[in-house]
Length: 215
Image (cartoon, rainbow, N blue to C red):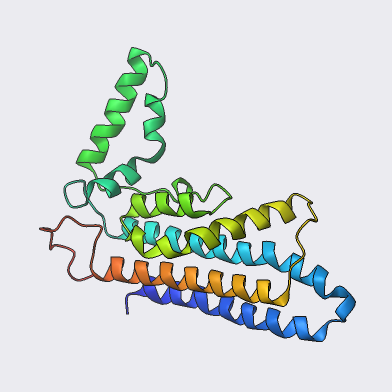
């Protein structure tokens, strides 16, 4: 197995152990504290979801850097990902010197190996469905494979945001907790599967590129 896929698999495995431990812990605490515990689990479950997504996608970016890719090897979305914050030059009126700087940076990306910066991968601290969709577009994952999670994911993130901001209107049951454990678990497995297919089939490359067949 490609090393990056094994690393992502391991990143998932310890989270699965955490989910099992959370279920076990609920059964061991006094009943008076169970409702409080369930509220505390929602931000923690969200942290697992966002943490896995960020870590896995940053591993993909690191993998790209190891391949010494060039602009004519990759699909356009991957080339744009390599440019990252260089597009900030285009946000407002630019001086002639700034236009020259942008042009130099752009041409350098055409002449040299592409470089990818992990800081360009962002969940906006709110990994709801529209943000997940944007990340799928950036890398070129099969976005429609996540469509079935849209409603539950957005509701889950809304509850997490409310609890994180100090609201106490949500009274959660063990059924709610198990539902969101399963949701996060399914999302993580789905993203892991998308990345495995993406890397194994080299979907970041143009269809006619074969020079990286040994990776």
